[in-house]
Amino acid sequence: MDIKEIAEAYSVKYEAIPIDGNICFDKENACKIIEVLRCECRPILGADVYRMKNGEVKEFLMPNLYVNRADRESFSAFLQRSCDEAMSFVKNYPYRADSFCRRLFRKFLAFFKNNSQHNDLYFDIVIM
Image 1 (tube, rainbow, N blue to C red):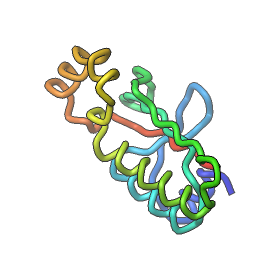
Image 2 (spheres, one colour; image 1 turned 30 degrees about the vertical axis):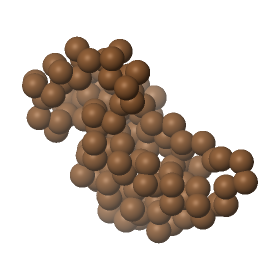
Image 3 (cartoon, rainbow, N blue to C red; image 1 turned 180 degrees about the vertical axis):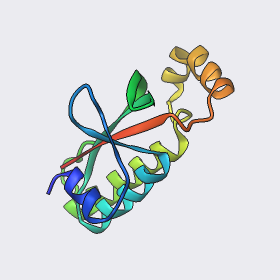
Image 4 (cartoon, rainbow, N blue to C red; image 1 turned 45 degrees about the horizontal axis):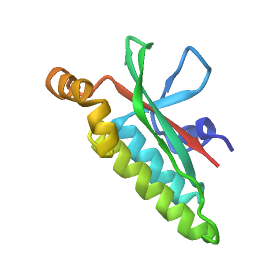
């Protein structure tokens, strides 16, 4: 099953991304789908973030999430780590950035923190 089928099977609300046919989740539903994916044993490979308004993508945001399986990492360890990293990413966005990204995106983060209620953020979750 793909992520859309999983979301539908568990009644997790999503939005279509008009530019590429994928789906995305608001922050609350992104957290729900991450827990569903954990239960379904579906590791998360990454997440893209969009700002959307009225069903239209307004901008693609940085940083994104990428999760790679480490050498010799068991499937179950990768599953748990990928879901944990995705949950932390979604819950803490946009403040997850490491120090390099913080310097690079300092003005963006300050603007975003002061001018957004975060209810226009949507997360495109990529699964294995």
